Image 1 (tube, one colour):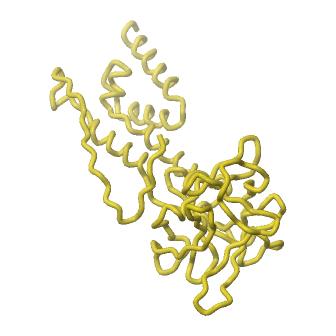
Image 2 (tube, rainbow, N blue to C red; image 1 turned 45 degrees about the vertical axis):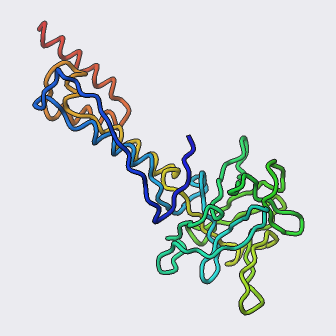
Image 3 (cartoon, one colour; image 1 turned 180 degrees about the horizontal axis):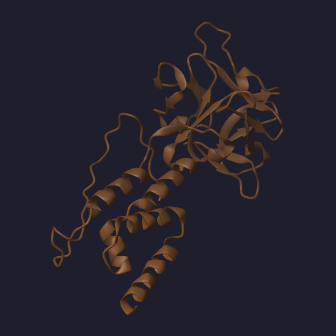
Length: 270
């Protein structure tokens, strides 16, 4: 289920958590609170903090494309499909690596196009980022063609930054305003990689593969001693508990569990 985006400063609704109580179990034989485990799991699933994409493989889900302007701005679109540069409000000391969106118009949903290494970027109003032959950017179509197809390239000499290239091999770029009170212009007609084409991509932490993998590993460790003893059918020694918890992390839990159950039979009939 897709969750609505939330922004820094938004009040989060409190969730009531219920757990079924087994009347046959007393407080003495109860393990760690199942409620606490559920709460931690929900917190991780609902992690709406923003982090920087570090590799092309990180780029997925809601993203914010931070532009190399001073002060920092980001790529945004309005309801008519007009693409513009929007000032970033949620930022620490002007550091683009700390930027977070404050408006849904600043957020794009990045997805790889099936069977390719190319990306599409869908804006707030369900239309895809497009670049015509003149380098003019719009977001007015719900269909995917070569105009809405992009390649994300890591910048060789600046880790954590990217180039976004069209199928005409031109790059997204910003042009500084020519008027005193003007705003930077975003286009898609740069033919060479330079400072003005070097972008940062901010994304929601829960979509970052390495963070997701770490959370999955932690989730595998969340099993109580009592649950392990019930699975084995007897009380366990400390080293046996550690072995089973490590096995859950490493992926050979059922093999280790079978070893202990087999040992139980040998001890019983030996």
